[in-house]
Length: 482
Ligand SMILES: *Cc1c(COP(=O)(O)O)cnc(C)c1O
Image 1 (cartoon, helix red, strand yellow):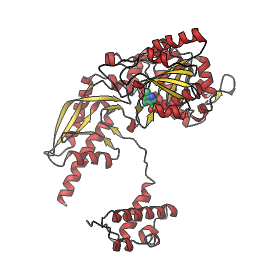
Image 2 (image 1 turned 60 degrees about the vertical axis):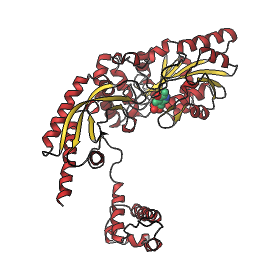
Image 3 (image 1 turned 45 degrees about the vertical axis):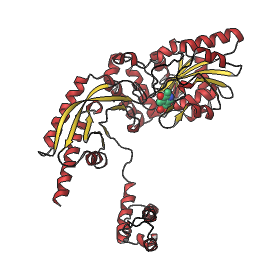
Image 4 (image 1 turned 90 degrees about the vertical axis):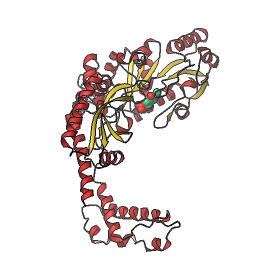
């Protein structure tokens, strides 16, 4: 590779027009010409960058045309598509967080196949509100007076802060100044919503007296933020909702000043998952009972529904949120509403919810059942692999809840471990993601590929994983015999 750019090569790069005239591209009549032109330009630009970086790639016109054709054709292939999650991370944000229950899928299908009652009341035969579909269910499940669902919990936090704390002070503990994945940081959200953030306490310890000392006439809110996937252990202390409530009540009795107690609960849960003992995330109802005026949480984390943010709390506060222009900007569409309503309805029967909502089911499925699935996976892979290419074992593994929930919980699980006698783990992992018709996301550990069976959904996925491994080894032996 040359150290300095090969200027001769740069000068010889073909013109866009020249590449476009190659017979291969001239025949691409089913793709709009502008798209083909853009693809050629992108391909030539990429080559120019590589040459400037010191490389000496081939600049043959036909070859550029072929690459440009592949680029243009790529647009007609789906980008957002299903994957098989064999990573063992249950609420995997990169892989779309929660898998919806069949009931939710059916509900979405029904409202997208035709017109719906999105904003129509059959009872009054007149205009209705899209808020009416989920609110009664959320209230029934949490004991809240009122509720509103918006696009996601980040939107919910933004909306609560801008409605109730814009131009005023909101007090938050330094121990809760967290950043949640995807650059959602509490101080930045505060700034965006024009609330003045007043930080109290130290990173590890915040006392009730810290909040008390920080209250001024400008204080509109005491904000508590769930630390999500961040945990401090050891010499730590935080103030719970009950104490924040007493503080706000005392201030009201003394001066008449209204201070809201709001908790951003992050994951939120309707069921306390007793399987996780002391680590179980607090349920929404517990925060409300402890005295929070408002609580917000995600729809697609522990709840196992579609992407949404749910705000519950006092009726007059929710009524103000419904009138906030942000509620219109952040409103849910009919597909999400249908999925959310159907998921919420499943929670009316908590036993049923644990079986039917995939996220919840995966979280609590006993390790022994996961082991059976791992054994089935091993048998399926074994059947398809030629002898002598890999060693297969079912091994104990640790799954994770993901999505910022239950970060301290090691969820006992089982995985299929594939050790390579031919090929290697890196090559296989790449093949499974990039070459399989449905990408398979597994993990590498010490030169082996691990498929955690906890997040593998069904027989179909087991079969697809077996085919993925078989195809990898088949390609290996093909390229060896070439
Ligand atoms: C995940 C999380 C959010 C953001 O929720 P989204 O539904 O992803 O927008 C906000 N706050 C906390 C504490 C969280 O854990």
